[in-house]
Image (tube, rainbow, N blue to C red; front, side, top):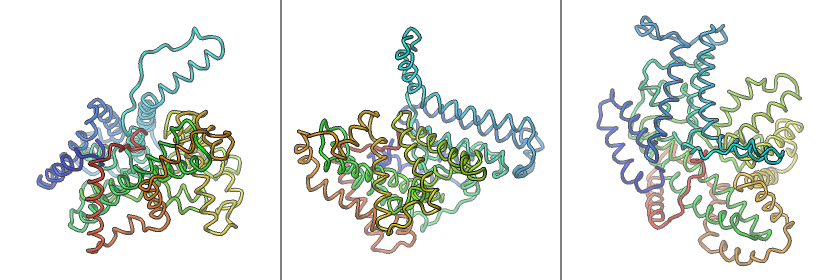
Length: 486
């Protein structure tokens, strides 16, 4: 089930909100959890069982680390473990079990097919095809598994570090992991950010109104901007031939599609959270205004960037052990960040390109090696580089990505079909959508700021955008969510 679908907008959401607000406060957690499992298991109920298994593993690990299995512990509040204190063998074992289980689940479901394909290629190339793994099994990737495993794993790590108190109530923890607004595509919420809200949160008209406006803006981003830009990108990337202009148009269109697709989803998630009384952190901060790749990663998918920093980069040593170690840590984090997005060599190269420029920027200081450029030029350079890397993100394989980059720089020779492709993508509707996406990207205020204070004109605009989005949705067959596959 996706947010921009009739079944969610006209059935699940109204019925879910009505049930949630009619039930007494003591049952709201349970109702929200049940709704979340229905939402997640809509496509395949087995996915819900897998999420339940992950939830149980980390919940039990938290209890084990804080000694709450003892009956006496349930009679009083158990404080967090002392930060930086010594941990027993049992506590270490509980953490290892939690992390290992999460990584094993994520690794099997996300990377089994990729590993099997590359193993078979290697043994065939080595002339020992008799060792091929001839398996008829193809592992289906559960929706959003990368998001909720990271979220659940961070809980166990924070409990071990003493940054979070272990959840005593399983309903609270199950609600935290499964909460449907941000379940399948983020933002990646940490337990410390919502622990207090799970126990005591306010439900006000102002919060609900802001959440409605947030959701309206996110829906408009998705339907009115991301989808038409995606149609342009698909036409160009899937074309048999393309000229320089068409290749650049397709790359820019995809840059806009992935930004408005993902930031639109995040806006809708934050909006739904507000409707349910939760305040989630900002996940995007106008990333295409960045003047360097370092700044870009402070603005793009903030919850993932900070997760990788806090749970991978800093534990590896961060920048505390010399330049060489720092560069190695950046490389490791970005390569793994690329693989987190997808099990393919294209994602690995995408992460490597970002890591290489992050390392290069460090040689020029905190502002990057092009810090002497005027701000508009630095922003333009950053956007061009990011758009080039998105080619690997979008392409089905390395050969296609290299061919596309060659087309962007006129290295593919004469492209016979480029005129026909230009006629397809240069329609007024597509041009207007791409132009509107660019204007919103670089000129419009962020949803976070726009909805901070609601006025009658803002509310009217939000209502109008919802009506237009729903009208377009009723006749629009193209409606993918890019980050659902991650």
